[in-house]
Image (cartoon, rainbow, N blue to C red):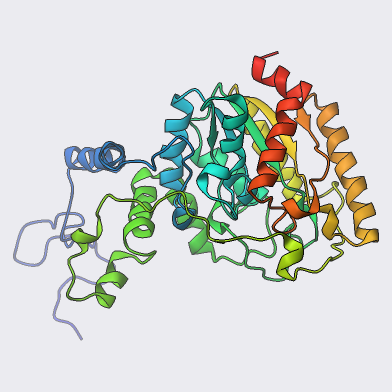
Length: 378
């Protein structure tokens, strides 16, 4: 029994016996912010990332690209987009084929387009390991600076080579850049993130301070959050980690590449998926729609996939798919090029050219009438 004269049904905000004072609402909280203090917090959420962008240098050089180690640093990618869009260059978007997985920064597609054109008018905005479902999220949430520009968008048929690559089915599948894919709609059955995790990802997309904090974690703390890093490095000063020297954008993760036939890669026969119902192709369409809605002029390059690797039945299926993609682009009135396959020894694997392969592809683009009209603004 309690000696408190108040019953459990009494007003909980009533003053304690003998005090004559009502308790302050939420008075048990340690920290309470006034409206002015909340305004300061909100301003910091937006201002800190913006100010940091003036302090930290971007990857240098006319053939610069996002450093391989920072491929999931979407705050840095947003800065790179703003810088390249402001430069007035033609922006080349795509996955590791555009980024140049097997070549140095000076031998990518954008670098060879600069050589062919005799200038520095093309910028590499590729991201290694990205796929169309992730690229759509990257463009929608982090590349808003790309407006009223000329954009070359690469379409890699590799992502349509199997139901697994197309992210179909309900069996869990670990794919690249899961933080960029739709978290709720359309629902991706093979993506098994928790509800809490999905909500956190959506929140991070919309709060610059959280995206910037993720940049610090990836760029300076090896992907660990500050608490985990201090546990692993108890005697080190975390402030010394922030050196403001980003990794070099040039090195390739695959040094000394060789043609695929010299790397003991065997021909294979992927089944390919139909365009109808393809999540990756629908995501590619969404990327293109977002870019065009922002006033950009878009030119699409399809492949060229390494057809030398395909077994006969798979090659026939791919030929039909490639033709369907070309017809769809033509029906939509989208300027494009579906280049013929490169010589076999110019490929490192199924979809990545070697340096000379990029040079050959750049020449084919330069010789294309549709590409010339696109660059001239017709």
